[in-house]
Image (cartoon, rainbow, N blue to C red):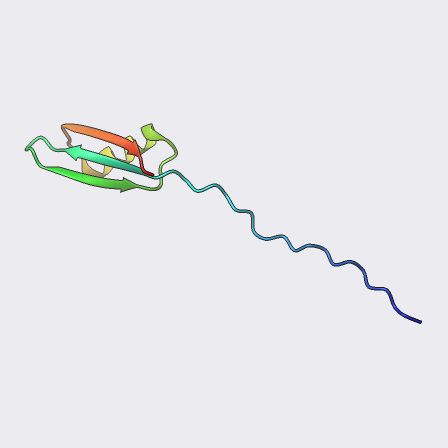
Length: 68
């Protein structure tokens, strides 16, 4: 008599989350210097702006764009 095997259950791979968007921020300081920042831990453009400003302090202008 042959034994029957139960069909194996498919293993659950860890769920893959959608990658978080990355942003690039161009900074102009009051003394004329400039710099680029890459922001990975932001939820949206406004959050990216706040992260950059909190990191660098006094800036003349900030331009943020979605990085491709």
